[in-house]
Amino acid sequence: MAAHLKIIRAGAGTTIQDGGRFHFRRYGVTPSGPMDWTAFQTVCRVLGLKKTAAVLEISTGGVEVTSVEEPMDVAFGGGGFIWSRDGKLLSSAMRIKLQPGERLAAKPGAWGAWTYLAAAGGFDTPVEMDSRSTHLRSGIGGRMIQAGDTLPVFPAIWAAASEGRLKAPWLDHDTQPIRVLLGPQEDYFSADALKVFFSAPFCLTAAADRMAYRFTGPKIEHALGFNIVSDGIALGAIQIGGDGQPLILMADHQPTGGYPKIGAVIRADIGRLAQMRPAEICHFALCGMTEARAALFAFEDAIAATACQRQASAAAFSSEILRSLNLIDGVISASGQSIR
Amino acid sequence: MSDDFAPRFLPAGETALVAEFGRIIDPAIHDRVLALDKAMTATPIEGVIETVPTYRSLMIHFDPRAITPETLIEQLTQLKAPPNDTASKAKRWRIPVCYDPALAEDLAEVSEALHLPQERIAALHAGALYRVYMYGFAPGFTFLGGLPEELTISRRATPRPPAPEGSLLIAGGQALITTIAMPTGWYVIGQTPVRMFDPSQIKPFLADVGDAVSLEPIDLATFEALRCDAAAGALAAHEESA
Image (tube, rainbow over all chains, first blue to last red; front, side, top):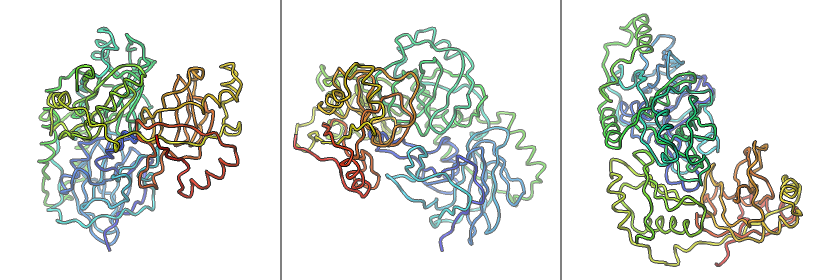
């Protein structure tokens, strides 16, 4: 019998996501895929999974899971979530071997909105329109994950080398400005409006889900009105609606829309943006195409080289030390700067 | 592409490019969008993931590792117009629509706002020849151009309760066929048993962008019968020879 991951408890908003659903955007189908692609690709990488593998995306509702019958190599990370195995605290980003009956649990920590759990081999859930990603609004790709679900896992080719903490400093909390490429409708805004957008603080509102994050801040005035004839939307597009407030289109964005888009969040910063929680503040910084591409490529290269810090035994760390590490993670931006 | 058809190229992040042919709804602009889309299908450019045609522009999603935006623009400007072969010709769909007040919840409201009898609204709506301009908002939400000018009505200030799947909506001089129930600022003036998006079909989406659509009025009994057939997987729409 193939290995299964059993869901003991799952908070609202936990879904299966893979690299995304492409080639149907022209029919109005959202691409979906992970909210934080950097965390998603990191946990895939340390298990030798492709970027198209299906993993569990966990919201701040948290989860509790167990392996059925067979030991299972799993990796988790993203956001400052608090992970534990049979009640013993783990690091916030690790690769471990989950023994049958052991309970692995995630709950939200000091920061972060999404965390990811991958199983070696990848989840073998049904494919719909070329993807295993779940789009809750349309029902394409299934429904939310619930207690009692058992997720089949493809047989893993290699056994993971050992348990250990992921050396992935880009998963640390980082509140530097979110970089933005102008376009396609930046000419719908005055120079003053652009100045406001790139200098003022903006606060994430409670209207933040897989489809879009709505921010509140000083009004961004339109120079040419806010009704445009609909055109295409890409991940990270920043719409300025009739109220002059930014709405950033996230993983479950619709592929076309009718508000002027002042710019787009660069790929390298989408993950950090996705990890924001309502009431958190951010700034936006102007970025050029050369910098955006270089940042993306450097980020992808770093993820491709993710290492796992081998530990003699995960239990060698006292839970007290790990708890304090988690606290530090929550306050200080540790070493994410090498990527930026 | 000749200079007459040269679009403006606008960035949409580092993984998408907009080829914009205009800023208004106009069949001639949409023709250019479709021409570029077809040219890209005929001569694929390496690194392009997919294209999304809209009223006035083509969004080109690409792999930034495989191609730079500058190279993409250069290759796009060198594309030749595709041969006008029959295989790529637009299809024409005949879609049954029921205008019975039981299914056309906002017909009376539109009648009052436009000072037109309900029968006249249904006749105008059913008598027009439409074109699929784009999809958006949700899977299979079909945006149609070609609505008679008499039926121009502005959007509601606040959305109405969810309109059911298969609703025919109008607002802002456009017509729309829905596929899932959701609140809308548009007006419901009819309903079709046709499922524009049916994931159980080999081809989940009935029409392609650029296809023509005509409407055929049906009564409530026919609607109910066709809806049962459609639920069983039958196609309630007919393809006509253009």
